[in-house]
Amino acid sequence: MKHRIGRVEQEIQREVNDILLKRVRDPRVEGVTITGVGLTGDLQHAKIYYSILSNAASDAEKAQAGLDKATGLIRRELGARIKIYKIPDLTFVQDESVRYGEHIDQLINQLHQQEREK
Image (cartoon, rainbow, N blue to C red; front, side, top):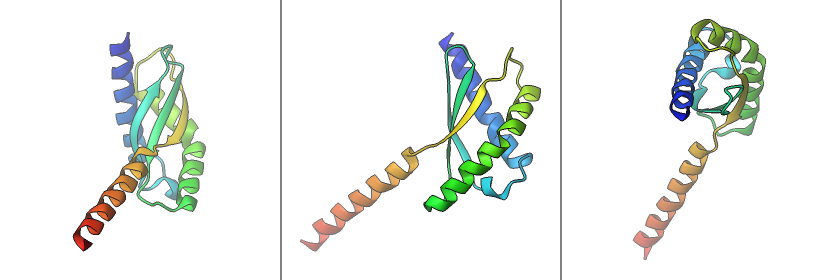
């Protein structure tokens, strides 16, 4: 069963990325990339993790609002593209791992800079 969940997660990720690129016309979701999907064991709920290029909090809020507004369209499109019994409820969550990775890179660069100054 876990293998099936993983396949469905990958398919949802691929299709949602495609839907965002080709079908959603909202300018707030431009530059949004789907980084992962977490599906419950009963396939009823999906958390869709996304990242954006901007670090500004206002851009993150706009992207979240745009994704929330487009959820119905995305779910309907998934229903037409994926053949499963019931399309899961979608929840969009910003993926913080990208920002965390950038923060770690900055800290490492600061350490290297301090070592060079010694």
